[in-house]
Image (cartoon, rainbow, N blue to C red):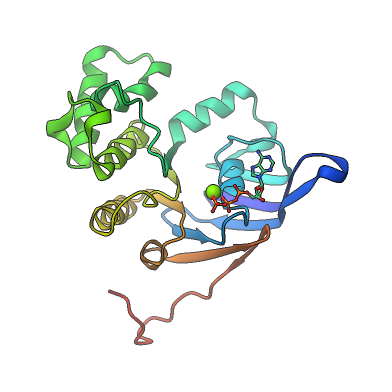
Length: 234
Ligand SMILES: Nc1ncnc2c1ncn2[C@@H]1O[C@H](COP(=O)(O)OP(=O)(O)OP(=O)(O)O)[C@@H](O)[C@H]1O
Ligand SMILES: [Mg+2]
């Protein structure tokens, strides 16, 4: 299993101000899976993703991600895991707008000892992968939303992650641009990358193989669609 969660509990605040946001969450995600997490605003989706991604260590329970138990990891080992094995994609793209696309994509290389030529080759490769090879030297701030998100995806792919964690990746995109990003996710999944995507949008969860529902911090899973049941699978 690429992700294994057992009885994850999380609360914000202490004492009478405490608010429980994850309740006994169990989850197993196999390598190559494509899972969507859906739920209403405030149900705990981002909180769960932050635990899985090692961005939030303030939880109880057992979490194993890409073969490593998050509990036992040093800060340094956790940073390595985040930088090397996990790609993050957010609704707001989180690009540095005054830098070029290529410079944004190369940011993960800050922590590696690669020489310039190797970094440049990798930047070109991943920009090519998302269809933006010709935009390497353009300012990120001058791109459209869909292009910004593809640059963010290229950056997430820099170190060939096994797992992509996405929080509302199409939330700021119009229908057509969002569809292109979903198609890109499907291709990446076909190539073996495991995807866990938080979404409000049916078009995203329809593309996923598994749909996990979170309600007030409790996770459940929709039954797998029956093959040949005549449901829409376009
Ligand atoms: N840093 C924080 N401190 C205190 N409470 C928080 C914090 N972050 C989130 N919460 C609360 O925890 C609950 C779950 O938040 P979370 O961000 O996980 O929800 P979400 O499902 O991602 O919502 P949305 O769809 O709006 O992004 C909410 O009630 C929120 O107000
Ligand atoms: Mg959220």
